[in-house]
Image 1 (cartoon, rainbow, N blue to C red):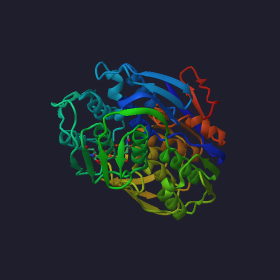
Image 2: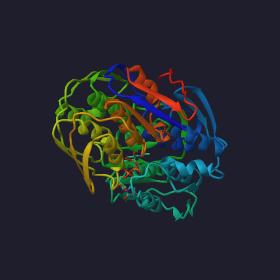
Image 3: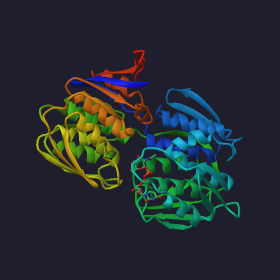
Length: 431
Ligand code: UD1
């Protein structure tokens, strides 16, 4: 079993290159199923979730050529909607985007119910509502099976009862090849939604308004091949910002879109961190004890829920009492129990966590409860006195490209150890 072994105390110094956005990539790969011809995707993050989705595409009959570390070429000419690698599908949240792309291309879809991080109940009623509005009949059991009686989806108006990233993207994907115009109202506005729209448009789709709460999709007959470069990952960048803030040091975070980081930047500045913005990078400098702050997570442009655990660790070592309010998920505080093992003083009541900052954390053996919680444990370990072991690192590797290699380049003492035999994985090829 591999785990991370961290010796805390080293400040972070140097430069780190951010990879492509995970949550854009995990929608773009399934959407590529609808492209007629070869589609080349650049700046694809090399993480286990994107690898799994590419394997699922291959199981559907697509040809996937890995050109280099961050570039793939996909040809779905011979793909079908049947015979997917359902075991793999079941483990990935984003596999639900295949419902949209299969319905769009084939008028039929079959996927498993999606897996992914457990933040409590993760309903897909808004996805289903959208597919129904476009004319699909959807049946949900262990599998999601759907078909369009007339063969082709028909554009429609869909008002989302809840601002949902996944439903917005799935309906957008399905609508691209539908007949006529689809309007998605109360749409989510995250940067990866704009990125998915840009990808689809670069392949011949007609999607307008992505990034606002009303998205209009004029259906087209088919998509053509092309080349697309995915945007940098907002949350990976935010994670290194929070890490530098909590641990201390000076790090230049490269290949970012500073605008996407605005609310993280503002919160860190409130906590006494220096953040300088440049064209495609941000410099984060942190010295001395952080100041307390209140954080409320909300859909974009609010503070991202996917940054809540990482900022939670920074607040755990800040001076004074901070209040975190989780505005998106019902259960996103499982990591607090792990953080308490390291000496953090946090109480949780429903969606609110009250954090009494402590001067230092101490090393302990902790679990990565999910992807971002796992990243938070790593930050905590790097802040702590002594040695921290982080278990269940497969969650972290779902979404962070070469996390350990990148942190080591910044001076962190972190290794991947395979126990019980004690061998160390080579992370020298840092991306
Ligand atoms: C995506 C991200 C996840 C992030 C979340 C919010 C991916 C693969 N994952 O998840 O990391 O935390 O956005 O930024 O991109 N909801 C419903 N009905 C639905 C769909 C959602 O009630 O049909 C609710 C959810 O329970 C949740 C809220 O809407 O309370 C937001 O969920 P959503 O934005 O859909 O999250 P995901 O797309 O699953």
